[in-house]
Amino acid sequence: MVCASLAILAASAAPPAPAPAIPSPPLIDYHQHLFSPDLAKLIGVDPIDAGKLIALLDSAGIRRALVLSVAYSWSNPSRNIENDYEHVKAENDWVSAQVARYPDRLRGFCSVNPLRDYALAEIDRCAGDPQLKNGLKLHIGNSAVDYHRTPDLAKLRAVFRAANQKHMAIVIHMHASVSRHLPYGREEARIFFDSILPEARDVPVQIAHLAGAGGYDSTTDAALSVFVDAVTRHDPRVRRLWFDVATVSRNATVDDLRLLALRIRQLGPERVLFGSDAPTGGNLAPRESWVDFLKVPLTQAEFQTIASNVAPYMQ
Image (tube, rainbow, N blue to C red):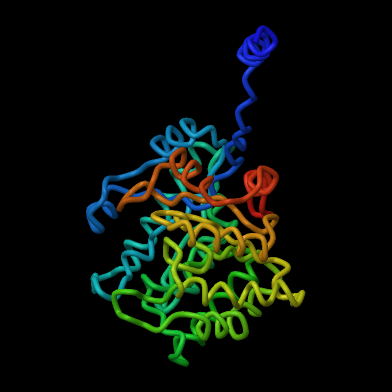
């Protein structure tokens, strides 16, 4: 009885087991946006300038961010805005001025609707801007690109070719328009991989939202499977590909999270980048977004690899 009591006392006096280590915050948020007052009014959100973004990054313990212009919003065909190119240029210029305030922490990419006649001219103009010359953001859905329209593909190829010639990395939101019910899935991702991507053979290409539009559903998984298969067979076209996880774990089920972990491992964590997206429309701020992403059942080492990845365009 005495021995048993001593054993209980010894156990109660033992130091508690150490809490599981929490992965360090990412070095870089690879999917952020700023909204000028004019653009914020257009799309119905609050403005976000560089100072506000820096405060969000500081709160998350994240040092740097890739700022993706959303100037293409002015040329969304659903809005039919007169002289939209003037607004596009103004938004890209505003983003340039904002990231210039924090040159050691923010890097800006310009953006354009690839179907607009002025797309190549704007890419050329951005390539001459010290703050925007590093890359280009494209949003297939917002720009109403149809993977099954030959003229759309020709214009998209020309834009990829121009970015490649200007040594501009590309971040692309691949998902076709949801509001227009344009088809999207494995077939469309295959068209992109075979017909569009080869035009940017010399520059990095970042696939936003793991080839989806936020969240992770069967459509996104079907599209991403094209890239998973390419990685598995060691296709040389994947060597400059990166994949960001912006908002993919939002509202995910346990099964979704398990599938995400599998796909990340199949792609290789060394190709995966953390991104949180602008904290609007239900998106989380960077700090909360990283915590949400930690729900994915990856190992500590895998999270740390993702958090530490530095793509060439952020070096």
